[in-house]
Every structure is written in C-alpha cells, then in structure tokens.
Length: 127
Image 1 (tube, one colour):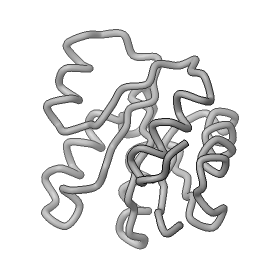
Image 2 (cartoon, one colour):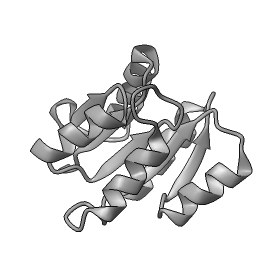
Image 3 (tube, helix red, strand yellow):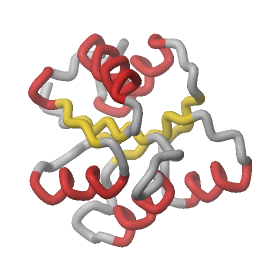
C-alpha cells in the first residue's frame, strides 16, 4: 500500500494511538509521519508528499484550522485529504472546517474501528 499519512496532534499519546490504528488499516510504518502542531505539519508537507492528514484542531503554535486554511491556499497541496480528529464541539468551527474541504470529523475519544474505517475509505482499502 502506497499512502503517506500525517498525524497532527499535540498529544504524543494520541499520535501513537492513531499511528497504531493506521498500521492496522494497512498503512506501512515508514509511511506514517507525525507533527505536534500545524506549523510542524507544514514543514513535513514541504519535504514529503502526504495523501491523508489526520488533524487535531486544538493545538499550540498553529491550530488545525489555520493549518487547513494554509494547505488549501497552496495549489500543490490543495487536494490533500484532511480528516479532523478532535474534541472540538463548536459547530461553527466544524462548519468552517467542512468549508475548507475536510472529508470527515471524528470526535475524540473515538473507537479505533471508526478511525480504521475512515483511513481505509480514504486510502481505498476495505476495512
């Protein structure tokens, strides 16, 4: 399976959990990248092609909304798939994320099977 996934979350524990689920969904270990905030994630996107971003919204330095806005403004990155994985409950903010073209919103805490299904759907593997 050739699919690069970027996990963007300020919690190392959650990044590890999401990484584990991504591997169970068929993503190879060396195709999973991590960032602790939106600024770090943009730096990853400068060096590696990413097919899917699993994005938290509430992070220091640069939050997920600003990250998604910058990705969508970049012609080279505009088609990158983004799935929000967050505790965010603000409907207006989630609506703005949908307007930015996020594919889905998965609320924390989530069931691993839900994340696995989303990853499988996005990367084209039945789970």
